[in-house]
Image (cartoon, rainbow, N blue to C red; front, side, top):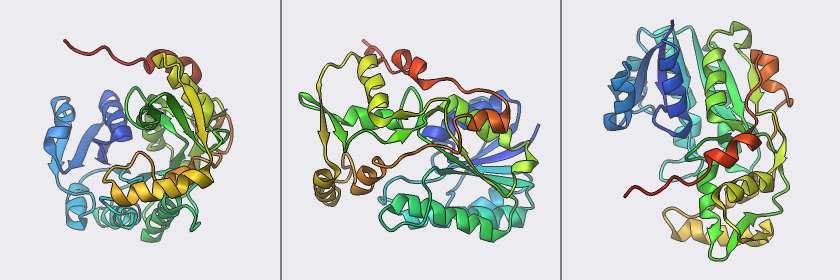
Length: 301
């Protein structure tokens, strides 16, 4: 089993990767700012190192003696931490630390849609981060995922915020195609990448076994929660100015202009069989999973 340093272990996706690494018998080390958030990993035998994944010295020190580094460190919004500091500088720091520590390989988690485009700040920042990692010269694989779904967090939070009064609000047409993948399956892809040297130096796009619209995924949520509200589609051209004002005035706005624009784009992998082609197994269909797993948990009394 490998010795692995995981960055971003306490985030939405990172939690799934951390537990799956431990399940697989790997020697896991996590670098976290708040050790309390990593208590569940420590109980299961992981080594918890306190430090910031954006601090070069901390990452370099944490990388000593490990075989591989996996990084899920990223932000989807430009504050309180900026795209530049996290999505761009983070991979540069990772690459330099990995090179200095002599690790065998790095796996960087990115996003489908990453590209240089001034209309999409988040996607541009992810592309820039990929370039920074490549420039470091470390052996690495970049995994770009479509939307990752789980019982909590991620897209589910977006849907919960979209229930406004008597309406279920959809930003734009809701017709953009997506290829969602379950967190459990996405985490498995991340871990299996470590043992695939043929993927070094490559950018791999991954998604689930279904291509569906944003509205269809939202419908899974409404059905699971038994929500019967009228769907209200707000044109992107109308919503962007509103989102701009909210982003200016609110610390945590329900949606940002960049998010409105991104949700209008198709978000699909290089093929419907992207996972099976690369890893030899078929991921779970989210459509059959969401109805039961997105039911709201009963309140504790």
